[in-house]
Length: 434
Image 1 (cartoon, rainbow, N blue to C red):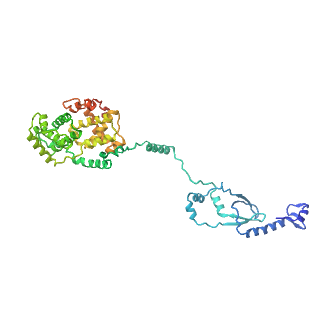
Image 2: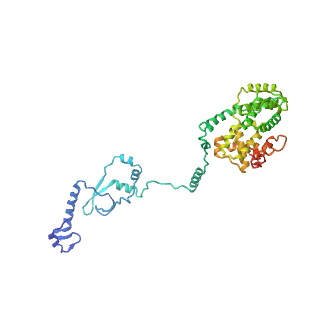
Image 3: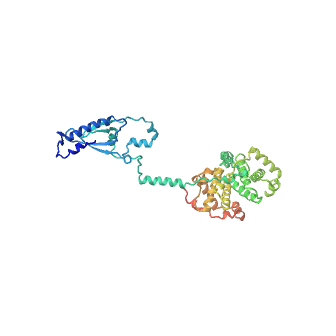
């Protein structure tokens, strides 16, 4: 508002406190009041004029007037309402919401000026006097924090399964593309190729002790002929499968063993022992005709089924999973050959015998129980599943040098087999029986 010079010259009169200044018979305060009301009407009619958002706190006074205390909102420190927090968290949803028209209320102060109040923001500010955070994070209790740390440590310390076939990717003889399928098939067929664990009940003239004597002798013969490991395991399998289906007298039991070894050599070996050599080993107890007749009888009884998964098939795979050295390998074969002599071990499938032999050998070599995730993954057996069989093997190891059946112990007592039989048995495994 501009005041003319004439009015400035007359502002020397004493001031009337209640009515304002005296000016030509009129009160100067009333003229200003009237002009302000006119300006408020002009401001109201301006196009695009919007009131700055504010919060008005009213305090009751006597009369019809109310003193307004105006407080400008700082956009930086402005309290964030729930709606505003939702718009930040979900910007796309907030952009799709239709905008509601702002509702404002016109009010006047004691001077007659028109004041516009944003009702929605005023209401939101009054409803939410305290600032809201974008995200509320609940503090976890100390026990929950400990559990979270334990879970994280377990995930970090979890032993990975080693890829044991990666090194043989370029070896065509390792058949890396099919090896898992092959061993899945072996696991499926091992039960079909196993003999009855109690077949001695149907034998009239032979017993478990005679079987043990025969196999202990065959292990020595196998070593003298320097045959492959596969030949020995297949020989034992052929003997047990034949005896579970055919009744044999005592004097023919040695012949059954010799013919089983002959068939196994024909299936596995490159250079096969002749029939005359087998007759000489038996001290000419049998002639050539008897050998050939027993060979024909055994093949027809077994229906020419020579392709069966033996413990040797599995022990080679599991030794690779255990990342074994020569000492562990020889000790594993020593323990599993001790088990071949014992009739009571026929109740275990070949894969379990192989896994238990490696587990018992690891306990013997390292002096503590060890069965890695890789061994468990490839063998399919946990440590608890191997304990019973492994304890029996360690018990056989303890008495391997005693008694009459010491063929396996003598074989593995030589430097050719690394003196594996001289290793100290893992007594601590027997001391933790359930």
